Length: 380
Image (cartoon, rainbow, N blue to C red):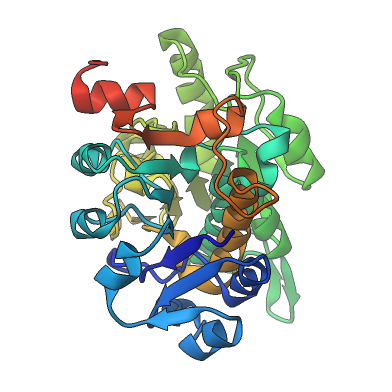
C-alpha cells in the first residue's frame, strides 16, 4: 500500500535545509511510496531537482497541489498558516514545530484535524536515538559555533612555536555539555585550544574529560529524567555565578549552549561578567534564539560590549545545510519506519512511548500538555 509523501520547499528566512535528501527518497520509493518534492526544495543544500527525479521522486512546481494530495507531509521548520490551510484534513505532518513560538499555528493545525508529530518532542531514550533530530542538528550547531569563535577572535587558537617566539594557546570555556557543547569541545580541541567546560549535570564530567577538556566542578547535581537539567535553586545559582565569573575572566572564548526545552534559555553570563572579560574576548551564544545565555546577546547580531564581541547566531544547522539535511532526513526515515507497517500503511500505535511523547496534535486535540495549556489555558 503506497503512501503519498510531500516535501515542500522551506519558506523560513535563511533556511537552507530540506526534509528529505535524494538518498532517503530512493529508499522510500523502493518501499513502494510516492514521494513528491517541490521544485528547488533542496537547492539551498545543493540537492537539485534532477537528483530527486533520479531517486524516483515526482518534482512538483505548484505547492497547493503538492500538499493537497499528501497523506504525509515532511518539513524542517513549522508550517506557515497558508501551508496548513492547503493540507488535507487528517493528514500527518512531521517536523520541528516550536509550539511555544507559534501557538496560533498549533491552533490552526488542531482545527484542521491534522496529526502532527514534533521532532523536538521525540523522547530521549535509547530506542529513539536514531530519530533524535535535536541531537543531530545540535551536532552541527556545536561544530559551527567553535568555527565562528575561531573566525571572530583576533588571535590563534593553537600553541605555535615560531621564529618570533611562542604563541600561547587560547583558553576556550564552554557552558553546557549536551550534544552541541560536546561537539564544540571536540572542535575547539581539534583547533588546538585549551578547553574547559561546565555543566550542572555532574555525570557530564566524564564525557567532557574523555574529549581532553577540563571539567569545572560544582557540588550540584541538576540532572532530571530524560537527560535534561533542572532549574537551579537560588543558593545554587549564587555558587554557580561565583565559579562562572572566575572562569569567564580567564577565558579568551566563551561558547554557551544551555537550553531548557520550551522555555527561555537560562541566563549565565551577565553584563557585569562581560565587563570583566579580557579585551578582545569573544562570546558565541548558541541560545540566542531562545533568549540567550548572555545578557547582552542580540539574536542574529554581533554586538561589542567593553571590547568583547558577543555573537548571537540563528539557525546554525542551516549553515551546514548538506550534512544537516542528510542527518535530519535519516531521522525522519527512522521515524517513518515507526509509523508505517509491513504492508506499507500508516499505523499509529499510541501505546508506543515515542509516538505518545512526540505527538503534538491529533484528531482535533492538542495532545502535548504544556502546549495545550499555552493555547487553550489548560482546557480539555
